[in-house]
Image 1: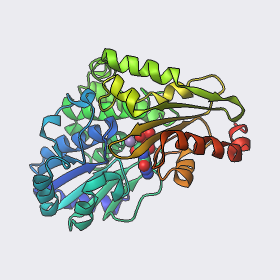
Image 2: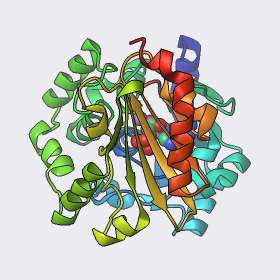
Image 3: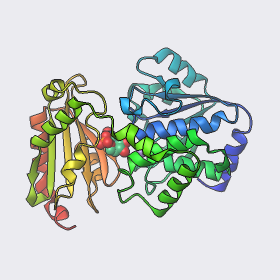
Image 4: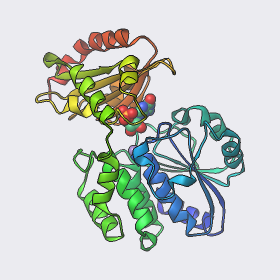
Length: 339
Ligand code: 5GP
Ligand code: MN
């Protein structure tokens, strides 16, 4: 985002507007944190602001300041569609292609609003009027901080914005341990604490609210873990029946794939989760080092994301999906052993 874009956006925001903020389907901490962080910022300028998510999000995000004002497109479609159609400005956060918003995509495509994209995923589509895209930044929440900074407004960051932005930086960096965590990230985090983010409380609210069933489901996932040392690869499966057995709730499988990646000498990890309702196998891929799961997912599983964290899906059975995955590994043997 250059100085010209910033002054154009500044001028745009200098009078009250109808603004809608949207994020990707199945919102995570970064999607919710960036949307609500920006929401609290724009509210201070008396804009009419609404956050709309394509669908709901896990219970461990149902405490974030402002979360109770979010509209969900799948269950509040009419109201959401009307607001999108009437918006002057549409912020699209933490995704860069309309299809990532599921059934909300046609409403976004039809919108005549000025579109501002802020996102850190690879290969953005070309739909935005103003685009702030940077794959080297750990989280969209950090980009919202930079965005507010470019508008010379960090003084407006109070406890609510600080909490929202801390949340997404924390979740997208695996609590500040992934390679995307820079010294700048830590400096911003320090400032967010100074501006009122209660770091210990945020960690507690997100990570220490497990149900007994969720831990049992994790036990099941770890029992299903398989390792292919010759490809430095490990994967986990969870069938729909296993999810039912442990009373699966949205968000219960978040982070489980990282256990596979934590194994000694493993640099490529996957989890395959059966979703009978959608008729798909949801796939999460993680890697360490140069091996790009973004490219792997784009090539084989209809998805994408970042170099070291990507998602995808498959429309064949769980067993057939795993078989396909294993059959692809030999063609990556050299790359996977070249780390
Ligand atoms: P997760 O495995 O946690 O669902 O996703 C990992 C990363 O890849 C996230 O940043 C997510 O936004 C992205 N991602 C997940 N699924 C897809 C997909 O189907 N397509 C694309 N382009 N990105 C995805
Ligand atoms: Mn993100």
